[in-house]
Every structure is written in structure tokens, then in C-alpha cells.
Image (cartoon, rainbow, N blue to C red; front, side):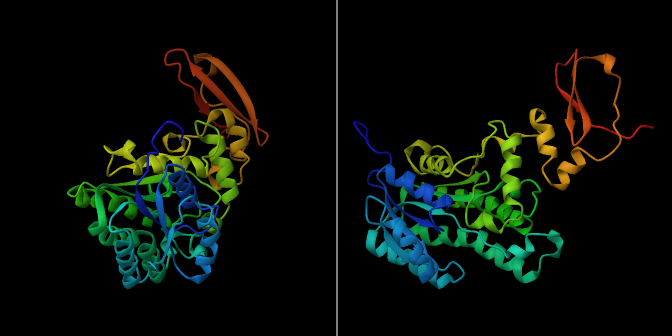
Length: 328
């Protein structure tokens, strides 16, 4: 950076969960690298090490590669012990790990097996708690920890099921860890990213339709990028975020604020093959809801061959959407 000190110059830290160049963690690594950070990367096994090595070679400063299987506490402890021995102290930690049996992300959440529930919670939530535990002794004052979550923790989303439960537990863990580690001046936050095409996302059914749905219904009418999530995470890890802890920051082009479908794209949204869309635009006889003489701005749009009427009341000026219903 010409004429300006890099935000992460002299800072060192670990990224957990980098799988390939489509990973959100890779976007974070690139953003940290661009701001001068020294990065360590953990990998679960030899197969994933081979995936990580070509990415590591693209970073300006040769990263430290450390084996860490989060399903094994001894492995997690050894990872942070090695990190401490080689670097002494670290300034940041990124936790980007989550896993569940993809076959149980479909169907009913209540049909999740006990074994899959335990594994999902252990890998997706407890791994974060344990990472914080072993990172704590080697974190510099003013350090920062960020984990990745998803809106399935707050709302019911298709084909996410028990992962939503695990992410809700993860977000609660962020708040408690922020309280614990605040005593040593370490901040703990989560990034709730919008849908991005990653290896993990490939296990979610109808993911392309989810991407399209978000694009149609979020305020910015597009999906968030890997780079945008990376830059926001870097900001939280940098001096820019020194007053923020215990938060879940949404980086999803505003999708999380929506209380209903975006009326501008109602017809196209309804054409998306989701059960939700079918309820929005049911296959019924065309009808009119209410008395149109009370409204000043009335227009109809075709939705699977049926009219949806948009009305703007004189008094409130708020747009309402009256869906087709069966004539009485």
C-alpha cells in the first residue's frame, strides 16, 4: 500500500478451515495478506494439505502449515502448542469450520440421528470453543477472533436443518467467549455471510436456487462475494474493529433485514421451485382481495399466470401485496 501503513502489518494469526480457492476462508486469507499479515493455515489431513499448499504459495509471506483435526482434542492442543513454539504470540484467529451429514440436511430436522447431531455440534461449534481455549494463552492483548456463521441460525432455511441448530449454538458461544476473553483484551465476533458457492455449500440441496432467491429478494439485488466477506473479516481482525466484540455481523447484501418477499421481483421469485414460493403464488383461481377503491396506486403483475395486485394506501403510503385467493 503506497503511502499508507498496512492495517495488519506485523500481525500474525491462524486460519482454520481453508479447503480450496472457493472457500470463504481463502477470501479472508487474501484480504489479510493484502494488508501485510503473516498467516498460519491448519489442515485436517494429507489430502487437504495438498489442496492448501498451492494456495499458501500465492501468499506474500510464506505461511506456516500446521496439521489440526478438530475432532481430536489432542490434535487441537498440539496445533496451538506448535504455533506458540514457532511464533510466540499471535494476534488473530479465524475459525471457518462446519460439517454435517449432507444426507440429513434434507427432509425433517427432527429426523436427525443422535450420532449426526453430536458430530455436527462437535465439529461446527465445540471446535470453536476449544480453539478459543488453546488460543487464549498465546493471544496478544488487543487480539481478535472471528468465526463464520449463517442466517440458518436465526431463520428456518431449506435444506439446512441441524446445521442451523449448530450455527445458533456457535453464535451463542461467540457471546460467551467474548465475555471470557474480554478480560485479556481479546475480541470475539462472528460473520454471518450470505450464500456463496463453496465446497461446504455443495452439500446443501437446491443451492443454486437459494442463490437466485437471495439475489431477487435482498436490498442490493445481488449476492455477496468471497472478497467482500474477506474484507469485512479483515476489518474486524484489524485495529478498525477495536470497539466491536460479541457481535454477529451480517455480510449478505442486506437479505437478513427482509420481512417479506421483494415486491419488485415477486413474479420471478414465485417461479423459483420452492415450497415457500408456491405458497406465495398458489395455483388457484384468480381473485381480488379487498376493495380497490380505497387505494390510489393499483397495478397487477402476472405470477404463474395469476394476478398479484399491489396497492398503495392513500393514508400510509406503504405498499401492500394482496395475493390471489379463491372466489367465495
